[in-house]
Amino acid sequence: METHGLVTKFIRIFSVPIMNHVSPEFLKKMMRSTSHDSKTVVQNTGTAAALDAMYTRHQRGLFSRGIMQGLADLFWHHCFSQPKALRNRLALVEMNMDEEILRLTRIDDTRLIKIISVGGGSMRALIQSINRISQERHLNIKVLNIDKDERAIDAGKKLAGEFDSTDLFDWIRGDARNLKTLISGGDFFDIAEMVGLLDYFSEESGAELIRSVYNILKPGGVFIVANVHPNEEMPFVTNLGWPFMYYREPKDLKKLLVEAGFSSEPDIIFEPLKVHIIAKVSKI
Image (cartoon, rainbow, N blue to C red; front, side, top):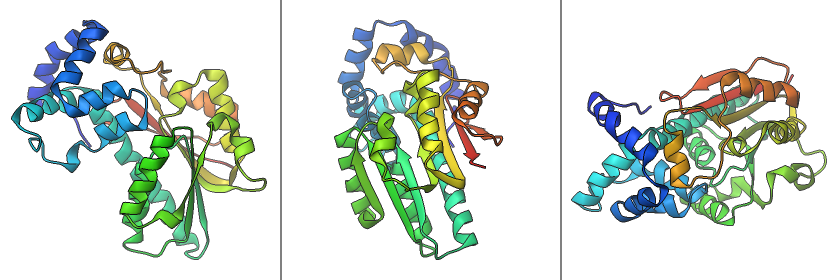
């Protein structure tokens, strides 16, 4: 998990207030001109492409694009909580996905495990989790992703191909709000994942969306969902041009789960920087 060291904390005393108050135009211009990754984020706010630019920071050397790019990446990737928190969220989702898949295989290692990712983008966490577990044991697993972003689906297919696991995944391009019509009748899942989508839904529409997920879970099935949490960099994110998001406390997320039909107590997990919360809850 990534946190802020003493030097970073000192830099943040000045950098966060400044970036929270500069004009959006100046902020975007600075990000576009200083770093390839920050330019990608600015040009693709709210999409899987922007997230992947932040997710994959550690997959290359810091100064692999030169000293100036490296210094800029050091600032944008490591002096702000947003990129670190997203990578923390990814790691925590993977850990919980590992735990649930292994739990099901211990019950019966021959059963077909069915997973759905709702608005899953490129499904990086799921693909990496399945690849890691399959190195140690045989998995009988099938994953369905529903996302309206064609570029995200293409990125996911490419990533699955790199791990030689294309046959484990199915992809549907569609709006998650139409989940009932997109899923075949009688198709139920052991695990449902919805990470990064609920952020954009109000209380009423969010509860309705979660209810549609609840209805396609098997009894005993597990739902893993994340939501952005109130944090000091919210003005920075707004200035960046990110689509409007609903920031929620744990009690707000629990309330949505109850309204959607979940009656068991969810596990609430904060990533270390407390920019995101993750809930894991079972359907009784």
